[in-house]
Amino acid sequence: MSVQQFLEKHMLSRKIEDAVNAAVRAKSPDPVLFISNHMRKAVPSVITKIKARQILDSRGIPTVEVDLYTNKGMFRASAPSGDTTGMYEAVGIRDGDKGTYLGNSVTRAVKNVNEKISEALIGMDPTLQSQIDHAMIDLDKTEKKVPLYKYIADLSGETNLTLPVPAFTLISGGKHAGNHLAIQDIMILPIGASRFEEAVQMGSETYHHLKAVITEKYGAHGCNVGEDGGFAPNISSFREGLDLVKEAISRTGYDEKIKIAIDVAATDFCIGTKYDLDIKVPNKSGQNFKSVEDMLEIYKELCSEYPIVSIEDPFDKEDWEHVKHFSSLGICQVVGDGLLMSNPKRIQRAIQESACNALLLKVNQIGTVTEAIEVVKLAKDANWGVVTSHRCGETEDSFIADLSVGLATGQIKAGAPCRGERLAKYNQHALIFSSVVLAASQSERQTNLTYDCFELRKSLGIKQFMLVKIGGYHPDQRP
Image (cartoon, rainbow, N blue to C red; front, side):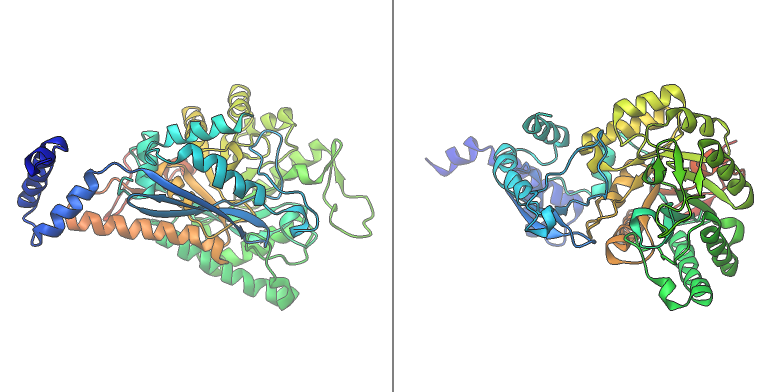
């Protein structure tokens, strides 16, 4: 075959001409490098190899990490895990051999990735997310050089990208800590921050003031932390924890700029039709059982006494009636986690019955990115809030940070401003912020990425707010 025939067969003349023209238009100082990069981008991405391994998550429990190789590079991700698995969420595969990691090894899952999933995906275009997800769904039987958050936004059709308002865990209880507190988390929402970096500053400063408050009252041992990084002083009542957080907020001077959210995780201490607030207290008297009506009154009192604007899973995961009644009161955002399990059928039911007004999004509950995009659209179409969430067993993978921006969920729950696997998410938001600012300044264009508290404040009944665009601050003109 002659050189000319070779060029014609592979249409190289046209491709090289296009690359040269692009270099000329760009006035490239290094045309050879420019043309090389241009030609490389023109080659479609193809998955060439998939390699999974077992690693440990933040609790020291095995989980799966995967390296995905393409003709354009290697990409790595790892999967978090929760302490409970509902009947409506996707189930992770554990080996069950009690002699190895107490039955929690994931070598079967690793083998599935290295053999079955790898065989199905090699040769596919990694940018065709829906096709990849459906290929894995079929197996289950039950590279563009763009930022990950932008890739997710393109998949979902989201154009109004936002950095989320972070919900920082300050006090841990429930199954996440060894204290006597029945409820799972007490968090803060820095809704008065004008930009994400200020929100992180407010969260960090409040966290450290809380450490001082706890030390003064309970001693240094009270500053041990739970699985999500929240402090775990040996308290047993809602009010004890809320008073500590309220005092910490007061010491920061932020006051009205910070609100409180609680994750009750009521299913974990629901006994029949009663709620045992002393379920973790040894030698308990048995006098602290509360009825559903008692719990309703407790929530109403707490929301009037403390700046609580969001409550997650206030009742048992199957108690649709009382979650619906509580939501109808309109006193705070009501987030569904155990109630919904990120499951589209349960979300549809909740929308139809007005059972709650916010979705807690856990990607590995539903199973794939494509399905996660679908349930977020369901929630947004119903004018719900969406809270992207971590799991208690986390890794340093920061995927959910990009997910929260790409899907513009508006809120993210990623734990305390403490511990590497939690900070990885918040630090990724900061990286997204700085990279977008740099790109915008170099191109002298206004970015469409915002840190926008409007929807959250609106849903929480807070009237004054500010829409913040990266590169400048603009009062929100919406009514």
